[in-house]
Length: 151
Image (cartoon, rainbow, N blue to C red; front, side):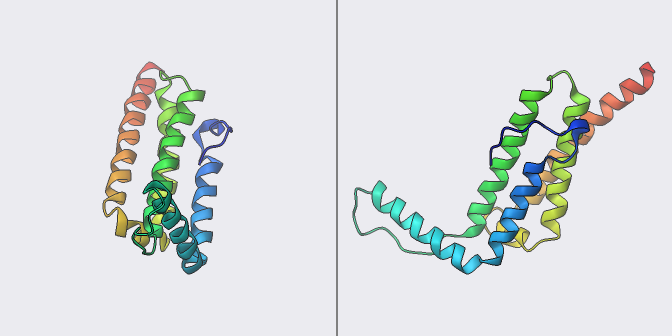
């Protein structure tokens, strides 16, 4: 979940956010096949990391685990992206960017079967990102109030 594009002007939802969620929803359409393919890959990885022994546990790889990792990676990537393009002192645009992207992520998950799948692996995903959303909202509100007083 990395790309070289800069954050959107004005702090809009970054295309990476919508693309990652669309990818996940598309993969969900083929959940059975994707699970089997991922299971084969995980089994091969387990065999190679255990020195080639054939005693590696077989089992289906949980797409919820993969999706949870994708979401974490997306969030990390967005945070790095804003760090690379917006000064740390520009708290307003940073807050707006994170507010928009986290809110978009939450709303899209809430209206998708992805949420139930991810929650099997990470039950507190909503509360974690709602807390991040609240932090961004608090940061934005503080700076907005300061700008209001100055103007």
